[in-house]
Length: 176
Image (cartoon, rainbow, N blue to C red):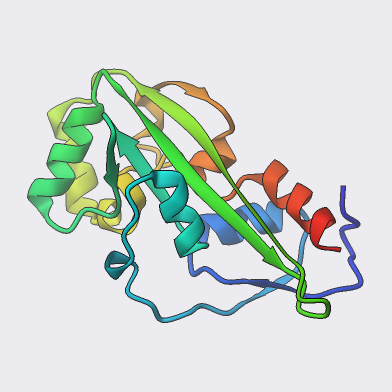
């Protein structure tokens, strides 16, 4: 494991609240610097290729289809109803660049989430709250309205939330 007071600065290239929280949980201090890019203009067929290309994103894969942030109430409802009593996979990536040496290390990780039946009133509440439009696939695993309907997670919860701790630690060590 990398020292929690490393002799280097960490810059998180993401505005994701979940990624900030996970990196802080890992004991790191960091600065946030994000790029102003249109992620929707970058397309790849395979989710693993897409997340590596975006380098700071995660995508949800449902029945072979990549799902990013829903763009309408109709799409959000369709996403969440689809997960109800079913499952989806989350694919996320991490890229670490050592600015001093130029060495760049990257990888992807995935996890599956299995859901119980999600009642319509819960779906309505999630959509009304608006958070569903800010997350890939339209659902936050850790949200108090979602969590009771998560039957199982195969893989790590931090991967589902947007930043695999194990992969991040591995890539930090490799980049040094």
